[in-house]
Length: 252
Image (cartoon, rainbow, N blue to C red; front, side, top):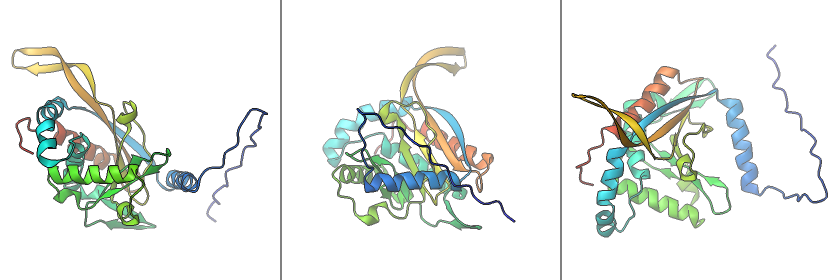
């Protein structure tokens, strides 16, 4: 017969006089349950890749003032990264799936979850629907709208439904990379690390030189039950390729 799943044994916690006991709020209890369930469900494995985003940083610096004046929206890095992820998901539909028991559901739409911190410290994942169909202005508007409404506690239930892949920004808090937990029933989650100025080898026809470049790490957690290393690694490499090939002269 199949082995029974062992129940975790609760470790007794001793409480001292000066300690304070606070019950988790309802949302934190739910998040706690989701996290444990995801780790027990999916065989998490990670691939990491370093990306040179110098062109993106320079381009954003150049256009952000005019962008805000014209569109009435701040231009952060998030929509630029989301655009690359949506394009890579179109290239690798095997990452845009869900698992239901022994069945794989190939998702028709690319709905990108965007992990956001709430003012009370809890986490929520609003979803950009049909993200691959948005241009950069549309993506920026969707990212800012969902982010602002998450902060204000004004997300509707539909805003957090139907995600097919999730992106989380660990760089906001200074982390270089992370090993995020998959948002079930999805099969992958991408963590964006902090952008840092680093010395880098620059290859030229005259030889190799050291220069200062803006770099970041992408950390891809994926479900090894259904995604092998070739797909998981190729997908995150494709995201990196889109970011590194970013046209510094593009219009938004």
